[in-house]
Amino acid sequence: MSNKIPIVRMVNIHKWFGSLYAVRGIDLEIYPAEVIGLIGDNGTGKSTLMRILAGYYKPDIGEIYVDEQKVEFNSPHDAKKLGIEMMYQDLSLVNTIDIRRNFFLGREITGRFGFLKMNKMKEEAKKALEEIGLRIPNLNLRVDEISGGQRQGLAFARAYYFKKRLLITDEPTNNLSVKETQRVMDTISALKKTGISVIFVSHNLFHVHEVSDRIVAMASGKKIGEFLKSEISVNELATLITQKS
Ligand SMILES: Nc1ncnc2c1ncn2[C@@H]1O[C@H](COP(=O)(O)OP(=O)(O)OP(=O)(O)O)[C@@H](O)[C@H]1O
Image (cartoon, rainbow, N blue to C red; front, side, top):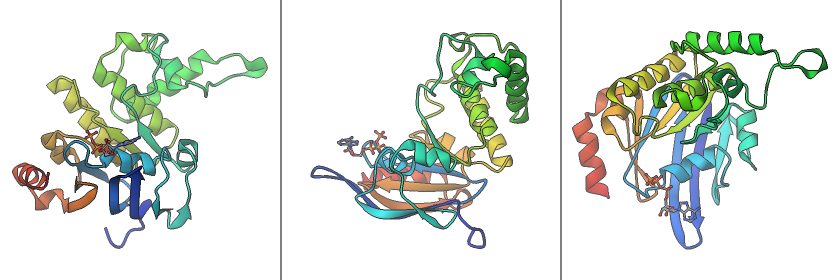
């Protein structure tokens, strides 16, 4: 990876919540078209680090570089403008409206006089879904009528369509069946092929190991290891995390 320029470089990031020292000097680099697994026990600072990267929190110490330019995120909007987005459990979808409207939520395609171009939106959504290998037969369904895996897929396809560069996804395989989990993992791999990078935060070491190129382990706010997938097994990851927590 050293001959490539990282999309993002986090340098010496520290964060306190009052007297609680949540993130203790983390360095993290993310390269284009790379899946990074971020692991660690509960309360080790993974979400805090990711929220800093996505502009929800400011670090107390440390710097963030995007394309080697120093940036300061004052809000998630600032990070989004640079193509960095954190996907939350609710995936920012509205259950009671259909898939194609969700796909464009707040960014609808309109024609003259502001009318919504429903067919155009349907076509574009279908194309984006297909390009990352997802088939949802009926885009007129409401989001609460599709499965959890399909909801994840929709959120991923939307990120792909709106040209995000780095997606942070927190436990995307939680509560999914084996088949649905596989679909989410396949979608992450498909996104990677389009050049998008993904940070996959999860407690499920099997899922992390399967989908990631590189795995970063945290304990007590610190980075305790960073490995290429080929360098470490799931069992070794489990031992590392349990020993340090
Ligand atoms: N907004 C906040 N205010 C105060 N303390 C916080 C806040 N957010 C996180 N913390 C604390 O910071 C520490 C790190 O939390 P964080 O959520 O980053 O851990 P995590 O590794 O993501 O955990 P989990 O895997 O359980 O989601 C914890 O002790 C947590 O209670």
